[in-house]
Amino acid sequence: MQRNNLVHSMVRSIVLCGVVFGLVGCGNHYPADPEGTLDRVTGGTIRAGISHEPPWTDITTGGNTEEDPGGIEVELIEDYADSIGAEVEWQAGGEEELIGLLGERELDLVVGGLTDQSPWSSDVAMSAPYAESSGIAGSTDKNVVAIQMGENAFMTSVEEFLLNENVDQQLPEEMRP
Image (tube, rainbow, N blue to C red; front, top):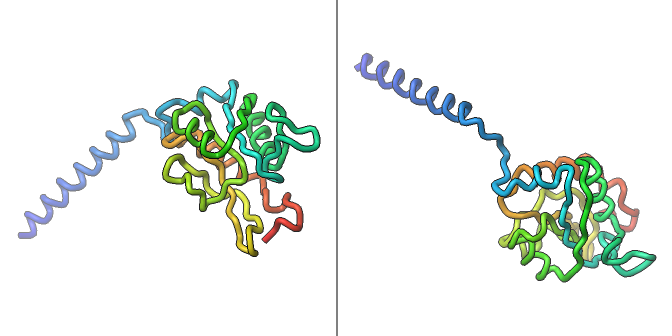
């Protein structure tokens, strides 16, 4: 009986080691981008969708335009792009249109004051919340960026950048929860 337990334990250990070595030997890097988004945008161009949602994004006031927008999230995405040697190509539109383009892989990300309660979360990936702000009726909103589903290396890179920016401390006092 003890001999059977010993043999069974040894076989299990050998199989486990084989699985571990097999995974290590695959040479895959995780997180991965099936479409290679992070590799493509690094040193290239981020195709960013933007919907008008001041103060997060602004495409109409104070000299801001669809081609040269302003706002908290615009600055964040442009700073992120600088950090990876990329440019940002902005495409303005309504959320529904932009989320559709993101799902069709015509855009790399979408900003526009999106929160973790977005109705689009079943259609595209949402970043981890990078800021909290005062919402309607005193609620606390958790702000996110929409990214192509499955592009995990790109998502991780964007999230790490955003989380290191301490956006909560940069918000105007009236926006803080």
